[in-house]
Image (cartoon, rainbow, N blue to C red; front, top):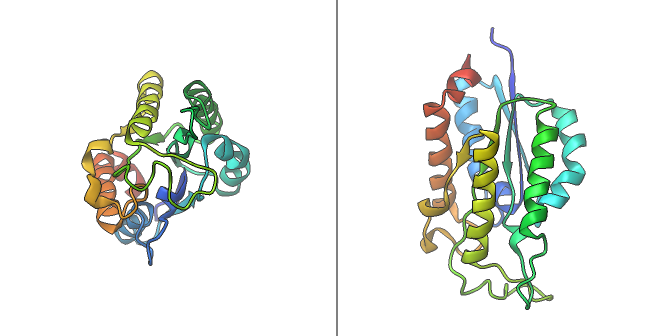
Length: 208
């Protein structure tokens, strides 16, 4: 009998699956897929928290990873780091974001060398500049999210880690509010990461 494998996905509301009525975020679709293939010998933890930035994730990473001792870590963070208000000053600067990512990777490597970085996605800016539900003038823009997506890619290349590039895979119709993917968008993200798991041999590792 194969030993149980554990995956931790650390992220924000996109990983968590904000506004989806059921277990339908890309993380949950991946979990369902792996549970079926492995007869439940693969356990996936969805550790996405609404509004989290990389700074927030750093504060909770050690305790949450220690409690689960993962074999695979996926980091899916950055959209909230790109928030700006008025003067185009980001809540988490690009330099700080990159620093946070590198620190997170150092922490992750104490658990496993199998670490993946998720890219970012963003829909139409119509409802997000400023965000309609914000009382403080929060702004999310495609250009800013794309910039932070590139920061993640650069770190992945420098650290020789898999980068799941999803920015071009989704279009405006894959978002209901310009910020959070709808079910159609989450299915596209799931299909992309599932395909990469298969091509890069991670699926074989998980099912062995």
